[in-house]
Figure 1 (cartoon, rainbow, N blue to C red):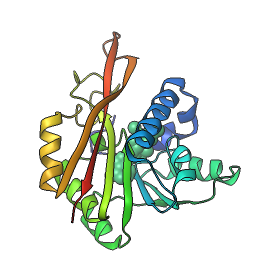
Figure 2 (cartoon, rainbow, N blue to C red; figure 1 turned 180 degrees about the horizontal axis):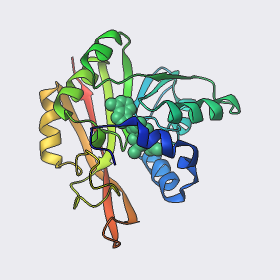
Figure 3 (tube, protein in one colour; figure 1 turned 180 degrees about the vertical axis):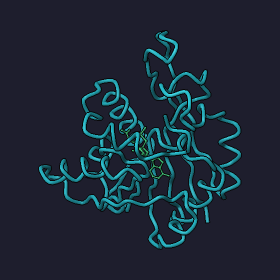
Figure 4 (cartoon, helix red, strand yellow; figure 1 turned 90 degrees about the horizontal axis):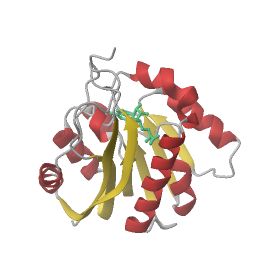
Length: 217
Ligand SMILES: C[S@@+](CC[C@H](N)C(=O)[O-])C[C@H]1O[C@@H](n2cnc3c(N)ncnc32)[C@H](O)[C@@H]1O
């Protein structure tokens, strides 16, 4: 049972089997495709992925950008990513354990990026508005943020009823939070419908959105 926000134990336990779930792989590919279509990653871009996990999205985006900083708070997820990198042709991924939801770690992160993206991670971060402010500050002018996550859900998506997560996001509220972080929302679209047997044992469909927003100044 995870009764604190982002307890890395859960992801550490799941890391070695993470990629074996075909639904998860399909979602990651759909997210990567949607990011590629919306953002058109280029070889001039430095990219940051927060909550990269085992790199299911990472390995789709990295070949398209100059370099990709892949960060996560689960050491085991990052170990799997490193192992995959060691046998991959894709070498421009820098893997690090950083929690940008902590103000001290965010302040130390002095690089800037033309692209910051994530998949299914924002709902694990308690202070959405504060976090968006921090990552907006890491964007270079003209840079773009692309976040894929769940629309507001019934609270049954996660198997552990005690896990502290946001039960998806209200699009209007998230848009307001992005604007308050100094970003201009470009697009907000449904990119996938994730079907799973939820905690009540019912097969339910959970829509996943991709929101993109740019830093104007
Ligand atoms: C649902 S998983 C998604 C992983 C990956 N993006 C994927 O699509 O397979 C969420 C990931 O976010 C990471 N995470 C949660 N909170 C985080 C934070 N504050 N900073 C960085 N990573 C975080 C977790 O360790 C986990 O690997």
